[in-house]
Amino acid sequence: MAEDKLAEVKELLNSLNALELAQLSQDLQDEWGVSAAPAVGAMPAMMAPGAAEAEAEEEEKTEFDVFISDIGPQKIQVIKAVRELTSLGLRESKEAVETGDESPIRQGVSKDEAEETKSRLEEAGATVELK
Image 1 (spheres, rainbow, N blue to C red):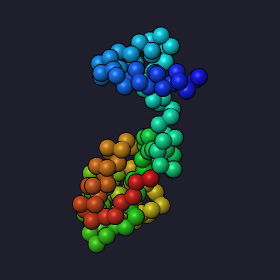
Image 2: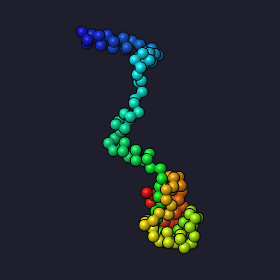
Image 3: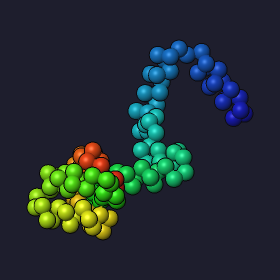
Image 4: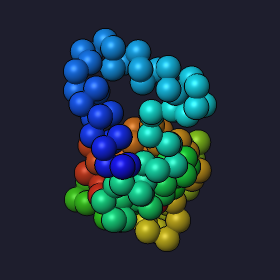
C-alpha cells in the first residue's frame, strides 16, 4: 500500500513544471521548518580524505615566521634586503643571515607580509621558507 502512495506522489511530481516544484519545495520547507541547503558541518565529510584537515590547518595559520634556508651566492644583497625588511643594523642583519635556519628573519607576521618578505629575499638570491 505504501508503494502505491509513493508511486502516486512520484507521478504527481513528474507532472509539475519547474516553477510549481520550486514553490512546493519552499512551501514544504516553511511548513516543516527545514532547509534544502546542505548543512555547513556536512561539507568537510564530503571532501576527499585528509582535505578537511588540510583546509582547517590552512585556515588556522594566520602568523608566519620567515627563515632563510640558503643564503645563495649574493650574501651582501641578502644582508641589504634583511636590513630593508627589518629594523636591524648592519651587524645584526649579517648575523641573522649567517645563522639562517636557526632564527627567523621575521616572526609572527601576516601571510601577505611573509610572502612579501619571501619574494624580496628570493630576489636578492636567498632560498626562503615560511613556517
